[in-house]
Image 1 (cartoon, rainbow, N blue to C red):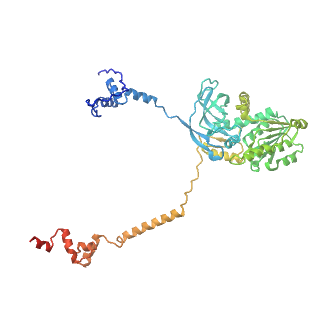
Image 2: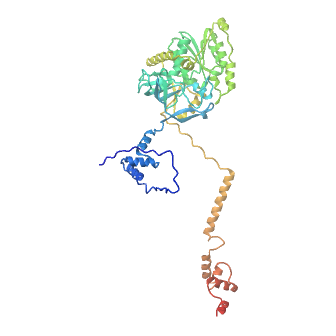
Image 3: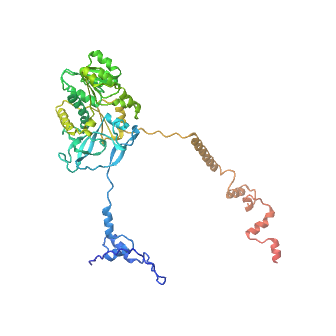
Amino acid sequence: MTETTEAPVVAPTAETKTPSPTTETAVVTPAENGHAEGGDAKVAAGETATGDEQSAAATNGGTTPDEKAKAEEKKEDPPKEMRAVVLTGFGGFKNVKILKKPEPAPQAGEVLIRVKACGLNFQDLMVRLGAIDSPPKTPTILGFECAGEIEAVGEEVEGFKVGDRVVALPEFRAWSELVAVPTKYVYHIPEEMTFQDAAAIVMNYLVAYILIFDLVSLREGKSLLLHSVGGGVGQAIVQLARTVPNVTIFGVCSKSKHEALAATGLIDHLIDRTDYVNEVRKVTTEGVDIVMDCLCGEECNRGYGLLKPMGKYILYGSSNVVTGETKSFFSVARSWWQVDKVSPIKLFDENKSLAGFNLRHLLYQQDGAEYVRSTVDKIFGLWKDGKVKPVVDSAWALEDVAEAMQKMHDRKNIGKLVLDPSMEPKPKPATPAKSKSKKQASEDKGAKKDKDDDKKAVENGGGDEKKEGDAAEEAKANGDAEEATPAQVNGDGAEKKDEPAAAATNGDATESEKKESS
């Protein structure tokens, strides 16, 4: 085998000299360019082109094997994609779509989580409407709560490794197959806990625990009025309140949920939303010690009016803002303007307390990450002891998120709604075929009639006019003439005055032509 030494590739010169009139310029055809074709043939056959061949290829504008190899190295694989629930614009459910998005990569201090379950909260409905403070720019991936396994770990991460089972509270982007989350919002979950339970317990029980034990300091013998008792947070508050002896619970919700909630045996008095103030007064004229309100609006005034002396009113939501599928500025304004202004002097005179709680602000804006982490540990401890158990209303595929949102919007859920990326979407009903317009139907009917007429004409012998061959055969068969002449066949008649013309046409000499020639 002969070794070849590569010669440096000769780059084409920048200047091109114009040949003089006496100089002949040789035009090299591809067939004559033996060096370039030979080099390409060798590359195709798996051999290495010589230095001269590479130089010739570069001179003739071709690509050398080295350049081809470098080009292959530069080619990058297309970015991997994932499914995500994307809000394309504020408003109705049509703006919530399942789209393909590039998979994220963990940055310093972050972990990449393969999502197994996501939590749906009323706050997500308000984000869809744009009815929260500092709403995100659209398009954006929705979701504040998810559980799954760590798939990758960024730099400077401690306490987490690939394969850990965790639950996370990112500010948006949770409703996707993969999400990168700062570790200060990520929490290990017990080995025995399912991912659906993890997605159902963290946010709801965080809110409930802080309300019950930190803001209210619930003690034995107290009474509690709770709105939306059938929701995820409502069920969490009921379970935590039952860890304190002799607490009386008034649960307010729609009548349709009373039977299911009564079966749990955890709520002392179930009251319909329509006239709950009078119903409470029938049970106790004094009122209640604690009111927990997630509705806002005029319920603030009613709740404050039900408080006993030394009573506490807590506002932790404003779901009355959501009155329709799209954002209503009127409903937002009404919810806030319906609230009476209470001065500190009035609270002083009446021995009452007002408080508010917003987990989103505490966690992302007020640096409450460590406080939240310690509270999550306490909640998991209660779960291990069997004192609390999250109530999962139903699980939904990502593609069915709009239907899940609609159920929460209509207040039909009892417990938590969960999204599961691994679930298959529900089969969609077949779309009925669009009916044709009257004009189109008339045109189709006319076309069909013409087609049928043509078919009938063919079956009857081709219509009124007959083909030439058929006419001749028919003449012979009927004996109408000794022989059908070409003139007869063509329908021109059989007059004798046309015979000279026919003879001339057929190449025969006429009588006058014969006399002239003689």
